[in-house]
Image (cartoon, rainbow, N blue to C red; front, side):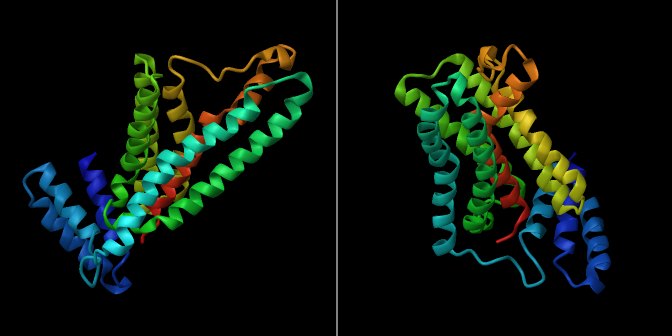
Length: 256
């Protein structure tokens, strides 16, 4: 695993060098990497190369990075919370004559979540000057986990099951989004997109450990598949998860 990550960082670094010197530089770095004694030092060596380029390390600009950090925290914490407050008004009340509207609004929310995730990643791209692309996934889901659990505790809603569910949700999202970023930066586009898509069920599987999507299938005439599709498209938690996955993956793949 360590070797795979190091190779990915070396390949990413090599692509930023002129084409005529890439193979030579990659071979030189791998030879130096092989001489490094411990796994931790190997990671440090590869990460230091990934943070630099043909002209040396990228300059750190507090004017750009600090607003990006604050903006990222706002994106992963406050934005989903604000969405929960707004969206609960149209998902809390359900009747036979509102199912169609709820379903279409839910689909529109999923599409909007994808677009907002991409846009937010573009706006906070300078964050990658402080948080390396390899740590973007833990940053995204870790910050969201801490902020959401803190909000639950502040309102007195936090229970043991919530801690387990949200922790497993963050773990699933982190692993698969992280894998998607690594694969993308190694040039495996198809596998990267596949890992990104799998991040959605992986995160939600953990997030719903002690609960379900919460749809009442009486509105679906006891048809399981339509009821499940309706629950997925109208779930606020699903929308927020998709948003964070798109945000984390886009931010990790792009480079400020």
